[in-house]
Length: 238
Ligand SMILES: [Zn+2]
Figure (spheres, rainbow, N blue to C red):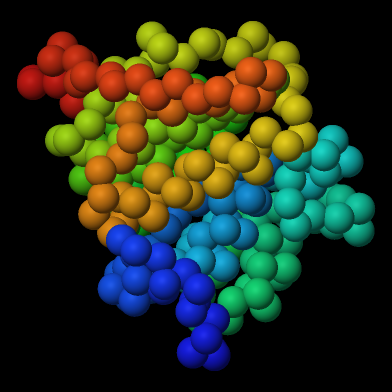
């Protein structure tokens, strides 16, 4: 709808109408519709991804509102994925948005992600990310890891057979203590935006950056070039 919708984006060198056309042909699957996921869904939809499946079994509560986009007090008690679809779909009716109110498990993950061109991590725990990693690599699907803790966020594009995988980088990722994850409200939006930037780059064939680490207090980025671990049980030579 509306040929002018992406006019300003199509003026961007290195993206252009060609990038827009590629983006419109791609299917993203977003796992987790909270702090990171609500922001990522909003951005990918506005930029013109072809379709987006939003998977989350959880409901919205008052503690989600400080770090999410889209949700309001009226949505408390509603399913995150359904509310994201309801509120985001009218923003861009060219994008096919599907809400999947399910918990991602070992049993269902493959059927949920098999048609994806890219997986967007909106989860908040390491075991689920290790599962996403394993299935993404098995099915040759790139995925964009993102995580937030207090005032530090991390993003990495993981491309099967090209980059290190999540299993390779886990020694660089601090394990959160088994408690509520502390997070500054503005951080998930920052990190989701970086995550979407990496997703767009991967989808149009540009080189991803490595493990990006951002710290709010110092306003600084580190980018670590992490090599594939040849002994990695997931991406190493078997
Ligand atoms: Zn690996």
